[in-house]
Length: 266
Figure (cartoon, rainbow, N blue to C red):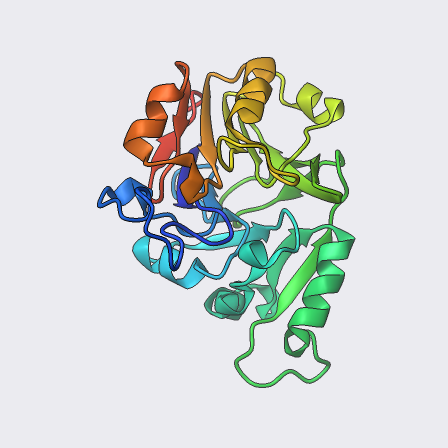
């Protein structure tokens, strides 16, 4: 299984507009962070599974030469995670019935219908993206079939708290992806047991009401004990990559845009 980090930044991205801090002035390409998203390829040659589709989606996919996608999984409804949905139109054209599969909670589906109603119209305008919204529930496994050539992939939505908002992360075999968490409940910690690769958000060093800070993210990693952990959804307040990475324990790393990693099952 292979993961490609399409974006690793928080809602403002890095550099942040109108900021001249050390991180935002950095020339290190690892400090250029688009909004958080990841592409998972479960088998060599299989269409990928996209997790979240933020406003930088078009740029992110062009950087990757626009690989095939089997489906999108959404964690929650905030703009930095769904703002690029309209740019999925080239993927909806080739999908069954020209409707691209999107897996999400019921509240996310409702919000999408309100935000982009033209995508769900009875008689849609020619060329708009169309979606097959498939409702998921926390801890209830579902499957995605990448294509006729490849077998189904089991995915488990993991309940997470983002401030007062209930959202989900995902476990796909040996990989777990959690973003925008401020609290990880015990049922999710239990579901992380045996995971090879854990991706989890760490906004900054100081506390935040709706995001884990660095120490809190490291605490989750310590409990779940993955072989390798990657931190994502960082703000400029985390500091430059080259400096911040010195604070991390073995087996933990800051992800960065374009980073591709494989899991131990390969």
